[in-house]
Image (cartoon, rainbow, N blue to C red; front, side):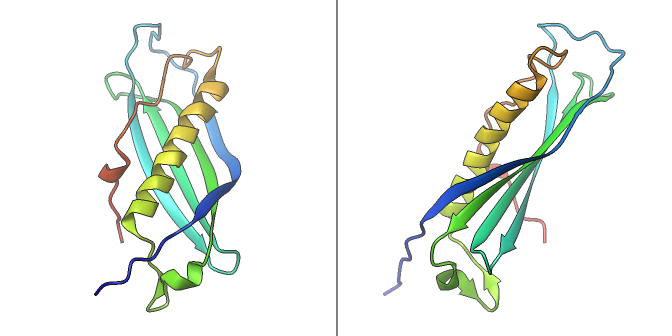
Length: 139
């Protein structure tokens, strides 16, 4: 019989790491469409029982010819009983928990970007709703 471990985590800090707004020669208006490159990095602090989720977003012009802005932030989650998830000296959290943390981080990033770019030519560059399950690990 397999043992199911319950994981409890909470968001304890949000840090904006980078925000750029590039002066653009392209004509941006309310009808402009944007493309987004989203990368998520995970960092583990076993001493503090923290998992940091770092979404990095690159906003490109509709034709992908130029980067018109970037934003990166770190969402820090406290994981209770992290030692229960250490296997072969690596932290192995259940995929459902990672997906949930990714989802919270992407949603938080959407709000940070809106607040940061409000009143600029990227005011309508809303980060789209994405399925957090589509992100894959690159080891």
